Length: 245
Image: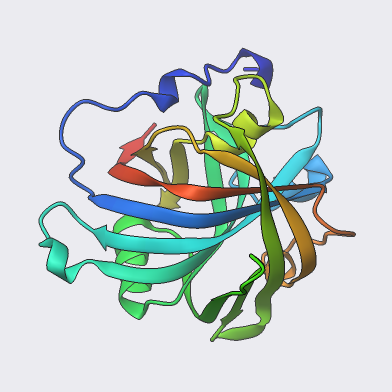
């Protein structure tokens, strides 16, 4: 199936039933997107997943943000977790459903790392992370993987003008409005789903950036990100994961 034929609106609808995998709040998200040759990305994505390309090019995203009030449905709110997270992802589709594939996810909570690895078969790593906000609006965000100090991100930026919810067909919708995620466990594809209102998107001014996460994932990028966006965040319901195929 061609990426042009994909249904990109149905995934935005909430699944029926209770969000048994819990609720989360994603805050202060920076979206850095780099353009890479499709062949380079294809080489490190499971063969079951098709690349979802924009204008024939593969885009790889680095997304540092805050995770707030993270808990499964059965856990009282008093025990919810707050931590920093950074994910490295690209865009794929599986059997006609567009979503994301994560090369890696950094988190500042050891408990969250273990839970996500066990429950979702996602490549989480424990990292030392910090976020600092300056009086002039500048945000400094740093992460360094404990098991591999070269897998790091150092970025400073300033949120910009409000763009509002992304329109279908725009590059912002293509990148930001992703509700399915795919992983593999014992040779089978797993699918999870999140639901939230459309991201309130903003422009962002990138002040500095050093990223070693892609090289750690077997990707080689030459140059700065081609697209930069920011969002103050969304409240999220989480469903799955389910084996598919």
